[in-house]
Length: 249
Image 1 (cartoon, rainbow, N blue to C red):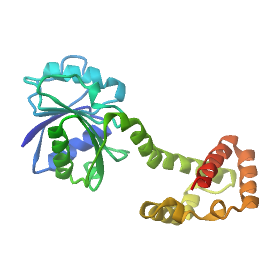
Image 2: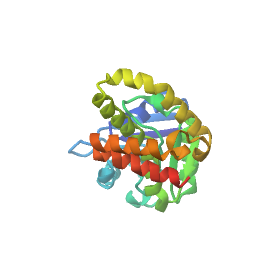
Image 3: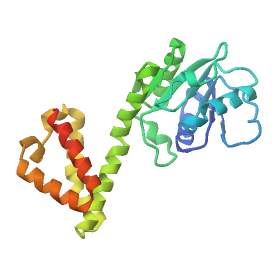
Image 4: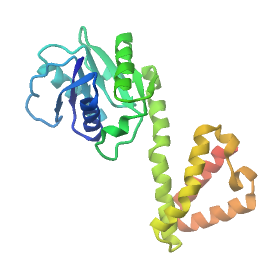
């Protein structure tokens, strides 16, 4: 059974720590705050996971190795767009990018159940460990990618999470302009949005696109564009960008 140390008490690090505590096959040795100004407590772990902001990874990793009684077998970080090579190279230490494909609105180990992770490493043993680790935490599996693919991969994940949230920010703005309570508007939009997401996740997007864009109803589209420009030209630009994407389908 691996002893695992996590450095970083943010939402992701704390969620993973909670999931490890519940696991029968993994042992959490320690959860350490990355903000400690002095040396970290002595680390005696087979695996060190760095759960900090992208730019802090190299410094935190070096500090962790300085605090390790012996080098870990695996050192991993959780930044989806950052290659494993950002971690310091040490003899006998396999380096790994291991990114949970999940959004953490709060620290919650349950958020790691039934999800996929992305794994990237030049070490077959690290990739094998990642697959077992994900399974032990209740995950579905891993997507394995080379380091040069990570920026595009992470952009894809932003489309799948942050951009969905931001689209609802646009709905909130339009709801306010219409004088409708945001909560009631979202209740009205919910069945529409949930069904659209459900069919998009189970079909090719081009096969299930509906509405005036799919029908090429230019008269209705022009009405939309005029109304959005009057409210906020930035919303019109978002609409036009999606319109252009639809024309490529």
